[in-house]
Length: 332
Image 1 (cartoon, one colour):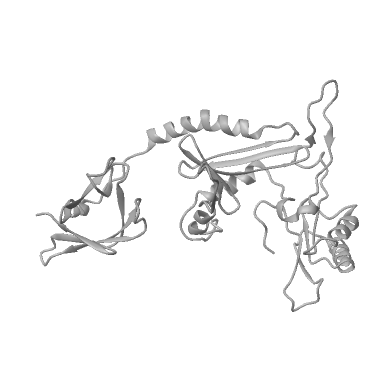
Image 2 (cartoon, helix red, strand yellow; image 1 turned 90 degrees about the vertical axis):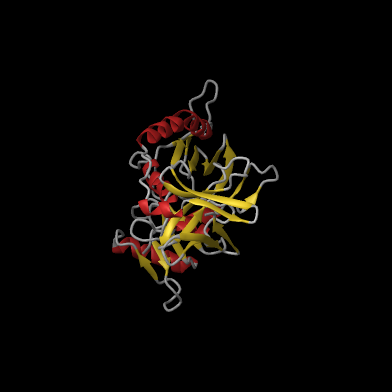
């Protein structure tokens, strides 16, 4: 049985059609009596999937919750047996009202919108989930999604007309104070939350409040204003310029085609190509990451991801470079 990211526990899920409709795989933390009870009620109400968010055996009210789920498309039941006095989750409260104590909100069940609710978590677990968003490279081990999948989730898929915000896959994306922020907020009676992170800076803020008038965005914005610059300053002080490969010196020079020219040089420990005719050559520079031999991959610019191959003569001297669709000859 697989776990869902952010959900506390998946309890039961129908197997492929090889078995009867109510046959399920059950997480081993359930005792046989509880399992039998779940299966019996699933059979009775035609439930295909049952999910427990409490991490414990189903308690009182399960029959009513499964019966209610049977009335919804998809036949999915989500039930919870949380006790505020025992759970790590804090109780939710209503708004502050003049002359009255805050109202204690009952636990919220979102069976009416299963696809967009019923996930419970903690700051610690959410921090692990957000740290996953900073990963790149192939999936494997602790990395459950490959970097290209994460990048696609964080890429703008739909843009607002003002070009200041939009949506990726499951994430909201906004440009604020020259920083791209990715995140998602949520609220149920008694709780208001916000997750926000900046992939480029590997900085994230998770704000979980337990009141109707909680203002998670306030804390998020202040963290970006106060904490993020301090962290960036500390990281910059510890960052060392990477040592360049001495062999890269043979690629340095000016490459031309008719009246166009591109400069290749080692800058800040990276093999870099730039056009001196640009308004800001530093901002438009392209770094070259080694692939194999004389082949490098472009990072930055319009041709990000495409390769550059340096061509040598019989003596091993670089004479030009080739890229998809064009080449540039090295000036003697």
